[in-house]
Image (tube, rainbow, N blue to C red; front, top):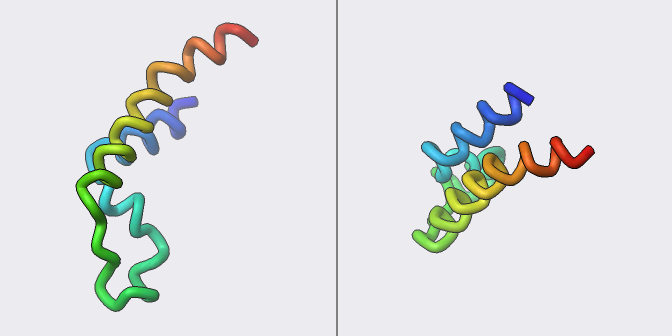
Length: 59
């Protein structure tokens, strides 16, 4: 669980890197990322960080 939380924290603080991970070569310097995509990525990482313990406890 600790590596997953590390990835989620990294996703929250550096969403541009996560969104463009592995696709820099396709766009020649990285794709243009909208602010909506960045906000959604941050929202998803926070939601998963708070929801994961609840789901994990149910099992």
